[in-house]
Length: 298
View 1 (spheres, rainbow, N blue to C red):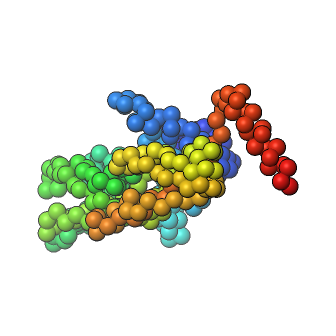
View 2: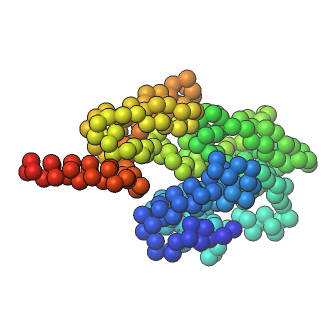
View 3: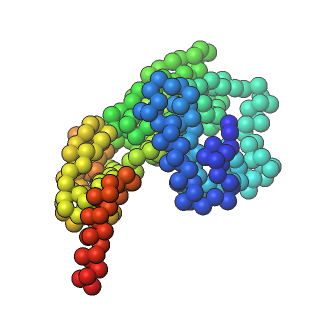
């Protein structure tokens, strides 16, 4: 897979601001809503989100800089190294190869992640005495899928054959949420969820935040702005004298609460007054007059 820095088009010493700006530019360019039916745009958009999710987090970025694509296993690698596992830290994976054991090589193939931990659990469970097999996997979902819930198809290897099943991702999941699936008395699966960053909305718990551009005259005199939420359009009322950065709360338009999907957080519209670039001569004259009046009051 391409280097995350290359995906965002920034150098390795890029600042947080540079990474954020590069992400926003690329996310807008390749967003599926603006590229209907384009598989390439969808692929690029997913890669951009994945790169930003890692590089925007100082701890994840530190691990990525040190271990590259194996950054998710940094803690395990270092623990193995501390136990004398050699430079790679993947002793158990080598043991699996030495024993010719790889029954879960296709485990959760649709997620495209290396399932070393799942293979370990499976090998431990494949003894004469049957024990409950525990498999672990990771799954990415969009913010829209976290809002509405989602379905995923996964493939497991069990009893000498592939077993393809459909799993449900509940509404309200957040990054770090774990979905537990008890398939039968012998097998259980734990899916760790990552919610991909969104091009427009920022999530904090069950609340959402979105910047809303409004004409500067509406911010001064009051007005209305159309806002596209995750579930539809609403009309936002902007009070007169609204300063830049002012948050307007829209109750119950945030994310569902995990386990209580009928309850939702709030959506906060952050007002960003903007100046028209194509002003007419008359408009410029009025603004000039306004400026003179302001100066005369000082």
